[in-house]
Image: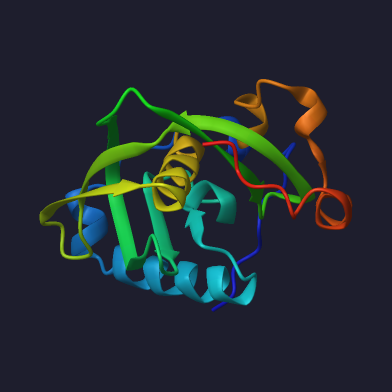
Length: 174
């Protein structure tokens, strides 16, 4: 089922999300919600989606990043992100909750994310580059943080069509 996307200004996007509980797993809620979130992400051509973006204040995100960075379709429940490098990168980020805008966001270039999988078992992955940015972006949503909060130079915030017209030929500033 395609879920409704919460847009910037909706209070759910600025709240710290609650932990997913053992009862959430047992009830089948997690599996059902994950399926709906992947359907929604695919419908909107996203690479990640956090539960608060679909009006659910729970610590749940889904990601799927194409190669070369590559993350297969992965639900991350109660994720914790830890930088594994001091090196910073900047990536152009947009968001389904802030449609039509894009901005340059500094982030750690590589992170480890520890999370529970769809069955509630501990899992982790180390990701870098665009995949690291995607994971951090989605996990930020779980703490009520939007990518626009992390932009250092407000001049980099622009409409997506203007970015494509004037800036898309520029390399990301790693």
